[in-house]
Length: 516
Image 1 (cartoon, helix red, strand yellow):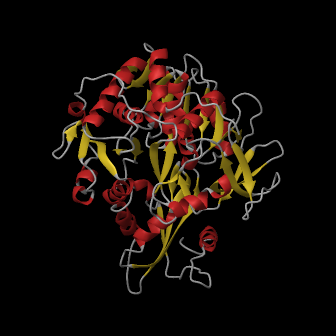
Image 2 (image 1 turned 120 degrees about the horizontal axis):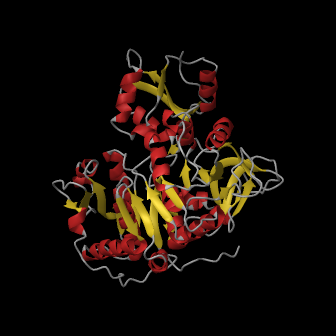
Image 3 (image 1 turned 180 degrees about the vertical axis):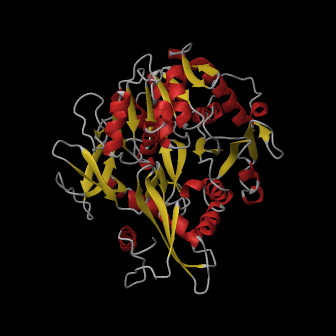
């Protein structure tokens, strides 16, 4: 399928758009504003400072930050010097960070004062890291971000960048419990960004609010790179806050935002939502998990704004299907393929299935990743026959609209965060009081799914739900930890080979054979 790229690489896009929209405000953050030209100059300062620090072509720079301008400065600076940005979830614990830093071969970490301790605590275990840069108050063992970019050189670095070069590594958990690094090239980012811009009909005075984390591809592509390519403005929130959301929309006259179903449910039921002026909103985008129809309908009715539901994954850069902004929209569907992509349904032998038949969702297009970093076997498994195998189950109706039917993988999506049971189970099995453990997603009205851990204690060992949750929180990011622990003396059902039958565990709980 032919696809016309808007630029040869992200560096070219950044520099040309800075000229095209020099005096227009691109970024709003709290009381700060940056025009396209001001942003570009700051990016160049960071880029030239990274070069002075010895960061060269395809060297890895880890971005361990919450949403802030410094994230964008660093992220974009990597594109300018052909380095590779490695954004990581700022709520990860030290052991999780250690694995990613070592696996990615990162040379520098850019962190911030309230979370940098998680990096400093593992300094002796991350030998490749040459410097830790800290946004905010300077911490012993770090260099302050403001001192790091004292380089006054605002000219564009003279570095050749190719569209095929890797621009970012996005770490996504795998069923083995170890995160996999998704390799995204400049062309991957550019292709998906253009597809989204074309679909969303961005207008000159649009202002997109980013409430989702920038370490995730949705925040990077749907609301950051797309606004830059379209020449419109980005309102960056430090993170999602239901109490502040309505103030942000009114203050900045926000025209659109992207969120996950949990956020829509929270906003719908928040007391501050009454009597607020949200007339500036043209449409909203929902992804990461299917949104309940009741929440969908009630949100649109209450706020008089259209929700556009879509689907994508990190391995496809960000977005693959979206409901039309204008035209036929099907509630409950995740829409039509974005122009430039092909989406099909395959059976277990990679044969295409006819409309209405459930199978695995597969994707082809210039947005599909280059592979997993240092993981050839996983790459071959997922990119079979030139198609990205999503691991998600779905079907396509006679008009080409895609529907999610379930997940081939065991992944749990809680509030838009992807959680893989195996990783949690490995932690549980390290507890000396636990004999058996199985982690399953159970439907939840607020989060879409909640993480449930089913635990069988060892003989003559007593353990409580509170104790298990605390044990997990010491070793895992909070969003991965079980929201509910069911403790039972009954052995968990298994196959003849000894594998725990999760579907039977789930059915047993829902039928109350386990727990209360």
